[in-house]
Length: 443
Image 1 (cartoon, rainbow, N blue to C red):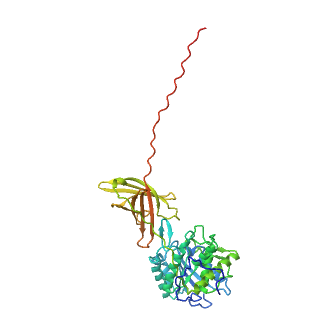
Image 2: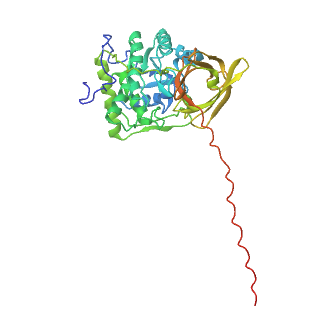
């Protein structure tokens, strides 16, 4: 079947630089089980997998096919968990090593770990944690005879440009390992290009709505079977999975789409899969570059000019969490032979941190350096450096977790609060003397 006419992948996503020659079969190529045995699929992911119960939606779509296809699924998914954390916790590995899986679907955290630049979520470097642990899981899946697949996820609603970074990160490791891609993120990008209304998203702009999960399940069905999902069920039921824990005592409606909406999503999922298959299963994209903030040139620094309290805006913590922009209060004082000081933060949502004593405070000819706790003691240190400009103190804050490579980079700009206007007490105006009494007059 040829791709549906008129449906093209977004230029920002499918800017083709090179096409890998590694062919992807019409199916994801695990051995087809005998008819009496269900296809067994293990999901390893997080809330993008368990919201609206993606595994159950896949089962429902397959059951509505002609002839029906029996699929049994299990999901090891917890809120925000990454492949590295799955590996360390051991639950996913134990489930995988039970064997008897035909497929293992790997879904990484939505931004490949945490990278905040000026309080805005960006896609992290995949080589820091995603790729190393993807390689480990693929190796383990193949040891038990299962076919690993990568679930290419979607960009958040407010950062559509990040889809190219996600696509390149998933495509490069999947191509290296010869593992098929489930092109959900590409299908999402196409739907968003044709209809920017955002029906695929939950109100948080990140997690999928029922329609978003339905589109992902349709892309997954196409990848597993090599068959079009067009004409499959539009109403799907199953057990809810709050926080990734299946509740078999309840059955709910997972998705109920109008036939025309369901068919449109089915066709997008199929044509996206078909186009990817015809390019050999992988594409190479050039992600747009993003610039890290830098500091301007600073004036010479002398401690007496810095003493006192400074305050201003800090863009460092998460905008999505309602933390940024925050207000930073920096107090510098003479502490014996060495300078000292404190810092406190009032977040955009009204929460507060501090005051914390400044650590490793040093004064260089044109740089002020110090460190503070990340959010609370024990979570690591934020390294600050600042320069003095005619507009005030301009600083940069950096943090990186050496274990999972979470990274924050942001800036702050402080000024001295204006002193309160002095009040001059004006004496009251003198009261006019009362008029003199009239002298009595005679008869």
